[in-house]
Image (tube, rainbow, N blue to C red):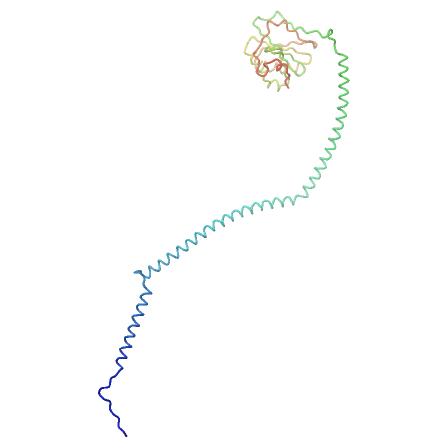
Length: 298
């Protein structure tokens, strides 16, 4: 057998070079990995806790903005809800009213029918009464025409008129300082005879008018200022009630001295014998002219 030859002394081994190359590559890879990791974790000098807080703050700001938007929407919804509640309450009230009307509609219909029947009956009665009044009006017109003709026949000629009634002072006469005013009392009326130089003034003798008539009360007020004044009430046959109201007002409320004198017949009054004793008062505003004074009060 051939013997193996032992190697020469000058052979070069490559194993240590490969080891060094592999180690160098590993170191380079490690440096690259460290650089990549450090680049990805670069935080500009902040700690992880600060980064987390910054992220939480940003998230909270976003949540606040969203909640503000939701708050506006919520307020609008609440306003709409209140409006709907009011509308619901109104509709409930209307529903109750309609329900009440519906429940009582039959009774109302019956009542309306009865009312309609009663109104129809009253209308028929009124029409019948109107027809009767028309007939009565025609009869009244005919009767008035007959009465007017009869009055025309009975009219007293001018040469045969009723003579005037001369009013004379009674007794031994009156003091020269006495001022006399005359009021005629007839059926339901009083007539102040030329009390303020503007003609006669007529008014109703009812108690309400005597108390409220401005001209008559002005006349009494002015007469009451002179203690020597006297109002002489000339009473016709049918004028006692008018005297009671007119003279009662003058005596009780104004403390005026009064007298009364019955007047027979229907003739005109002649006061010539009292001319020097006649008194006059200032005219009231409503009766300053003879036309106003002669106009009867209602």
